[in-house]
Length: 179
Image (tube, rainbow, N blue to C red; front, side, top):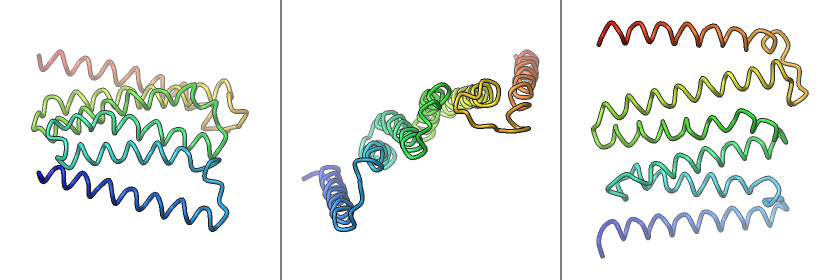
């Protein structure tokens, strides 16, 4: 048996034991895992893929991508399911391509490609700014969730637009000078 096969079998066995303990405890304690815990299954599957990609179990490190994406989707669903704030999909979707940028950066760092790491970081930063703009627009201006964010909500969107514009102009100027 190859060491990767043994590590994979051991990891899967430990995961099954842990899941069994969690589900058993939920039954004994009378917890409704179906209502609140189902996103954790998605988070767990993503985390397992991510760990396999990071650990070297997957020599190509390709599992970093689905692991990061699935974990991100699971965390978004966990937040939304817990808070019943499903309207956040209006801007939370930007976290998914941001997770692709994070995965690109992680894989590039693991395979020693600094240029790819910078590209991944740039992609993640772009979509995180898009998430922040979406959040401040949909929550602060449109009030999609019906929550009042007060002073922050009123002024965050215009300020983020200004800061993003300044950042784009400065970044472009610096790029032109270095080319």
